[in-house]
Image 1 (cartoon, rainbow, N blue to C red):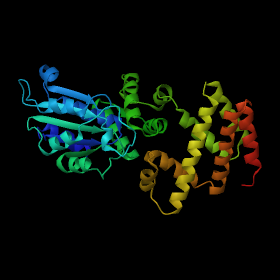
Image 2: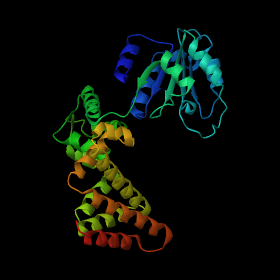
Image 3: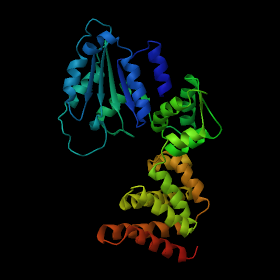
Length: 341
């Protein structure tokens, strides 16, 4: 089930005793939690709502709450968050959990309790008996990162509900500056609406002025300059990043990460994988994969490998020597530019 279907069911009063919410899209997770909270009248929230962090609280405490009758109300709402024990993570948990008791509750949930498992992970360990039974018994809802098109639609709908429209290219610029991250787009939408309240229009000037360009965005432009062997432009952009207070190691780490993504996308695309399949394989947002594939059409795998290895060498020198970071980057650019394209 997707989020829209869940919200429609809850709004219509179609409530199940057990829900499993899986995925990492923070904005949608927040929407879902608020939708469940709206099921409990304000005057009953203190007595009939329990929210438990599984990093801090044993699941047995949440189960005791879930098995209690609602206090002067129809339903009790119990939400457990970050159940790492449902994943394949092998780190020792900070808290001991009675998973047998949870398994028993899954088979015999309290009919007056709405028990919600919020698992903000990309996937659960499907080999575990607990996970298998939870998926079988609960209403399963996915909050995986949305595609660029889905994100655009939700942002547009949210703006339209408040009476706002996007001017030409304003939405494109918002998508670009947030890397199509829905949570970031929605967080910036409020500022943009306040700025454009007079005309109820969100303009490109507003996006340019209010939505900061991330280091990743700046580095994406730097990557293009590097691959195009535009030494002057690349050196100037690197210098500007340093002037803006960015740490040399952080700049280099983002550069390495971007070239790694370009290389991986190039290889997987050559093997016939689609954009969606590459995104799933690399666990990278679809929009970043889209940009990588667009860039890769212009550059060879050999150039990508050379740049990647050169930046790995810069990282080593940044960590092991006291040489000037700008000098190291300039030397990298000269070496890369002098290699045959």
